[in-house]
Amino acid sequence: MSNSVTVKICGEEFKLITDNSPEYTQAVGLHVNAEMQKMLAARMGRMEAAVMTALNIADDLFKVRLTDEQLRAQIKSALDAEASAKAEANAFKRENLSLQKKLDKAEKALAKAEKSLQKVQKAVVSVTGETPTPTPEAVPLDEAAMAEIVEKSKRPRKARKTKAEAVKVETETVEEAAAEAEPEAAEPETVEVVAEAETAPEVPEIVVEDE
Image (tube, rainbow, N blue to C red):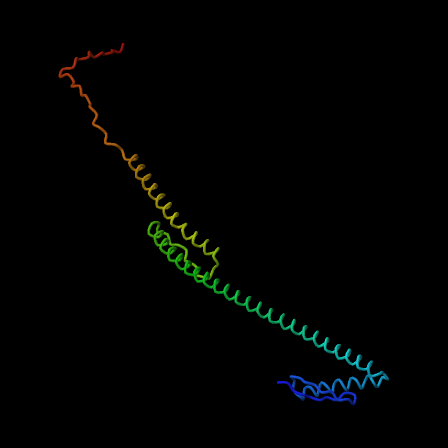
């Protein structure tokens, strides 16, 4: 809705048709009149005063626009920084969830490895009769450490097999040595006995007489 407003500048009235409110239009007229009075006080003609007033008002307008653009740029930069911070926070959150899942998986693998190790230790005891070293208390580990523990948990199986084979070989060796050491049953020797003649020939007795 257009409004008809009359403003007074330097003693002259100007009738304006504007979409702005009468109060706002009167405030603008008062500002222009004040600037004109400053220029006239500097002993300028009305035309010069009007031009200088227009330049001053235009200068203020450009400065306000520049300030507005700077503020808009700062606001945009702040909004971009906020969006970047949110994106980074979401990325950290996703990474944290991923690491938590890996940690849970590693702990499950460690528990499984410990159970397998306990079974192997029991098997080693049953074969060798040796008491294994107590299993250390479980602690959270990363994937590399978990892989090393799982690999180590497989080694006692090989050791058990090797130990069992060694025991078997040693048993066989002892049995062979025992078999070799046992004397074989001697066969009875055939002894020929020559019967003495019932009547052996008499040997003449030699008697030596002393002279």
